Image 1 (cartoon, rainbow, N blue to C red):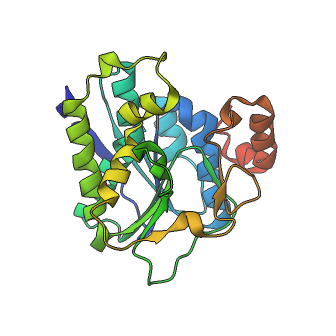
Image 2: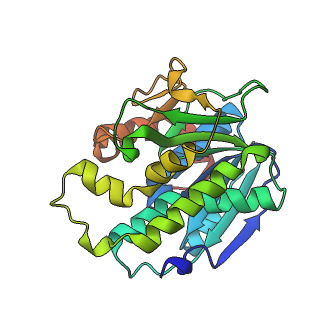
Image 3: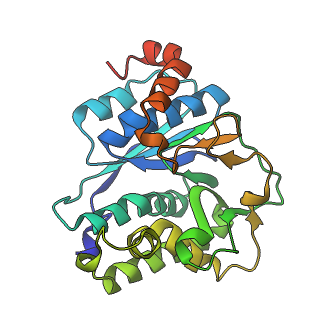
Length: 263
């Protein structure tokens, strides 16, 4: 079953950018969150590559017809979703690393901002040339899930071994984890360490890195507050809050009307 992931991937639009924001989503996550990630990138002038999982024809058409000021790359894949839902979620979290590796391997990009679908950029992110690998690292936590944040990762092609190591750790977890034993009755941390494998596998891969920049130490870089450089909707029940959705629709109302995507 593990080998069924990332087997039917097609690049629909080649990224015309050396440094795109890369995130993955299905229809639900795009129309509820990814659209705002994309529009925020468009507002600040950051190119994007979106990896779609089982996209509808409508989503593909909406994206290919979108009149953006930035370059937009698009890839997609079809997978079987009739499997253990924790196993499926683990891949939804990690598929962005697979597409990033392919874009690196094909020398289509020079570097990447690998992000969650549900983040909002309030400013263009620019790092100096001394930074080649940027990770949200929280070493004071004892469990792998919380040691690394997957909201935002920066990596240049010369450091893409980190992405490859993350993927290899994920493949190992797929082969060694009995997802059928995971239950909502488990405590949150125990459960997350078994299936929230983007952060878990990044933490394991990070153990092999001798140097990196800890982005968590940058002031105002990313938070659950809408006025930080990057607003992360992960945590705090924000994604389920009608007020947050109303705020986002108002914030991007002009862009939504112009693109006519949510009609």
